[in-house]
Length: 188
Image (cartoon, rainbow, N blue to C red; front, side, top):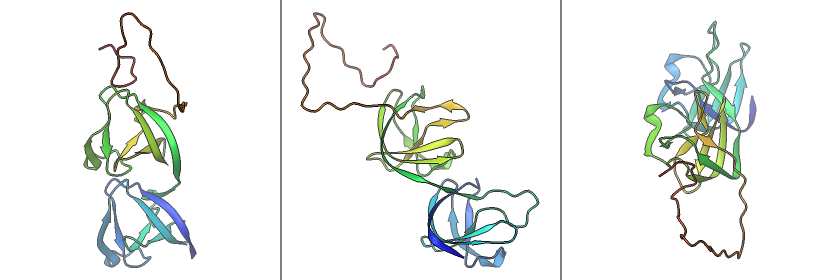
C-alpha cells in the first residue's frame, strides 16, 4: 500500500459505485455512486499484479479502482489529475455562450444552467486537465466551465491582463463613448 493525498477524476460515463474493501467483488459494492467528472481525494493506493490500482477515499468513504480489473481491454474508470490553484483570465469564445457544470464533465446531467455569454472575461481560480480539455473553476461561482470540446475552442486563455492602480482616463471624442457589455468583435 501507498499512503498520501492524490486527486482523481471519475472518467466512466456511467459513474462508479464504491466498494467496502479493495476487492473486485460485487458483494462489496456500496450504495454510494460517484458520477462522471467528480473530483475525489484518494488517501491510499493498492496496486494489483494486473496493473489495477484500488483507491481508498475518505469522503465519501469507500474503495474504487482506476482500471477495470481482469478485463482484456483495460477500461480506464478513474484518472489521477492535478488541480492547479491560481489566478488566470479566460475569454468566452463560444458563439452561444457556455453552461456551468456541477463537475468536470460534458454530460448533460452535469449542467447547472446558463453561464457566461460570448466575450465575457472570466477570472479563473482552479484548473484541472482531463485528457485534452482544461476544466475551469470561475471565481465566485459554484460551477465549472471548459476550454474546448470535440476540437472546438470555447474559452480562450489564459489572457494576459494588466491592472493599473490609481489610473485615470479622459475620453476626448466629439461623438462620445460607446460601452460594450463584453469584449467581443461582434457587431451589435
